[in-house]
Amino acid sequence: MMDAKLIRKQARQNIDEGAVTAGYRADRAVVLKRLNESLATEIVCVLRYRRHHFMARGIHSKSVADEFLVHSNEEQGHADLLAARIVQLGGEPDFSPATLLSRSHAEYIEGEGLGDMIRENLVAERIAIDSYREFIHFLGDKDSTTRRLLESILAVEEEHADELADLLLAPPVVAAAKKKHAGKKQRAA
Image 1: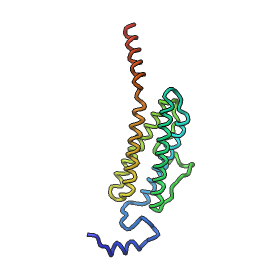
Image 2: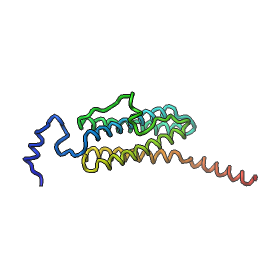
Image 3: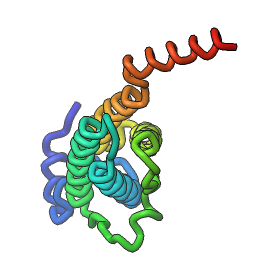
Image 4: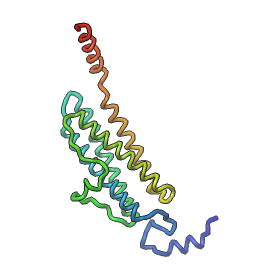
């Protein structure tokens, strides 16, 4: 049963800590460090997707480039949400370019052609998915607000991975042409 008098008393203590009350049970320093790592990961993904948007070339490049731009914008939204949560917890979001790659879980790999770009983005999404799952597990019920934020980001990262995996599949026309060509080779032999 909740003790209203105790909660009122605790709310008046350490009022300068804003949203972080006596009921916050996570290790705030660790959470802030991990949130800044997640922030770095999202920023690296924004930059890689943005580069790929502009560098995409080839017959199917327009639709893929458009998808890269959508993903870049969504990753920027994630970065903004993470930065806001860092501030809510009394921390400072680390946007320093000097240490961005060393804090990021994902790599910045440019890729050589559309297929490589899609693959590198898919690898980065898979890294983000596992990183967020592990962070969510670490938080458990000790910081439900951060956990829910990460769960919402995780859902989008899973959508991104699914979309990228679909892009790696050969279009039906190309697959049919390859099959027909392979059949001709076998008959000729």
